[in-house]
Length: 376
Image (tube, rainbow, N blue to C red; front, side):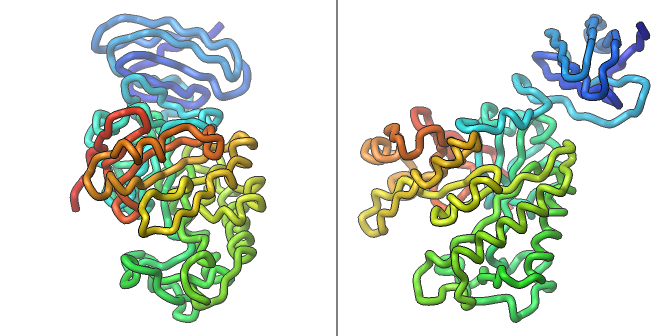
């Protein structure tokens, strides 16, 4: 049996290693081989003997120091994991009930893994543009064992989009409703130019390290007015559009070697037609609202098909009491957090408001918390 010394600093070839301040793990991903190795910690000078017998097997050991591993085949840099987390997020963990966090309107502070609050959240939804503009943010999340979803506007054009000049005037329609009316405009998603430009965005997502995408504004037919988009778009148009995006995304390999996943954002009318194609769902206010000035329109039950298919449903609720006072009222706690069959198995998080998806969050039954963000 060949013996090789694995040193602190790198991972390579057949091996995928994850280390944290709490644990050390080495996982064989190549073809079956027998291999015995030792990792010598340069800090504590203690040795850990590891034996990997076949592809897919794992060996774990406890240690106090952070380390990364290398062997003799091909060096690939790796980052240490956050304490208490695995450096490898298994796709099998992306399932109903997974804990998550969403911060879109500000970049997450990303100096150290201690910035990633809550540490228990394995799935993080961030803005794709911010992930590109802050190139160390996604690597920190990935190094901490997180699954990264990247938000992008699939159904509308935003004034700050770096690719805005590539969209012909003919595909740019009516503006969105307040407070987005001066900076976002619906797109004619039937146009092949729009589809190709959005495919290019998917390429960017994979390139910067996203594991999945969160395509927003794909339910414009629900908005007020006879023709809110300017193109008389129908649910069937968005169904076709999302299937085309998903087909392309699934052909792309992420940095982890997996296909790029695509979620469904709201649009309950087309959930039945998309559940077999898309990989998860992200819902806003599917329980409705307690605000007497707003239309109460619950739709959680339309997405139980995703749960039945073993696909996660990531649920955001915006309790009016939080937006108005910064604190969840007793009545809102009852309305939004009492278990119901309609959203059984969903991954629920409470946020300020749809226009303020910053670091403030709360899980039902827990105290509110703040994910540290960079104020631009």
